[in-house]
Image (tube, rainbow, N blue to C red):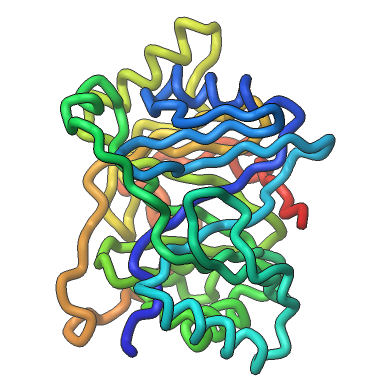
Length: 293
């Protein structure tokens, strides 16, 4: 089985205010709130039941990053490998409704993953999404205590493919079966740095900036163009202090066997983070959201 993971799954966020968090994301990006409960709110940018789930908690943090498996057999295989690796299995039941099966585990480097069967899709007229600025949850950017150890684990355990990296693994980008340049990226540290949506067009990045300005807020960084991935980007902070990226034009790799990962120097003159030459503000680097199992 070459690939175990088909695509990005979901992000599950602990917050004291699920409703306010969901409404803010909807106001900025145009996602729809698919379901509300007393202690939860779920949003989606497409026909999937959920891209981001907000669960009520006194803490603010990330409960898990969901990865949608190829099928039931892939979930079973990840469970078997996680046990073989001696990883802590947190649960074999999904955090979210509308998901049939899952395994959630903690890595020794910080990130918590939930590998799950496909989340339910709803029969909705595609035109319903025409007003939205984003169309899918694209990727997450993680931090790990040992990025090289994390690399070895996710390529071995999850079958992730390395798309590009910097020489010292200051950043590395990993893809799954759908071929997009990265499903998740990783660098040194602790927590989740950002979750990212794929926009319909460059104009939608401007729309997010306009929506922020209308509420007296502003972009954290951008608009710029990343090196690895070659996508246009913008970033802002959500009400939980987590960074949200809105991205357009992420590279797609059509042949695993023919792709040779890049190896880039990571310094202020390399333009790895922005081909156009800007440097991220200090607040961008410090904005990390902890995992809270």
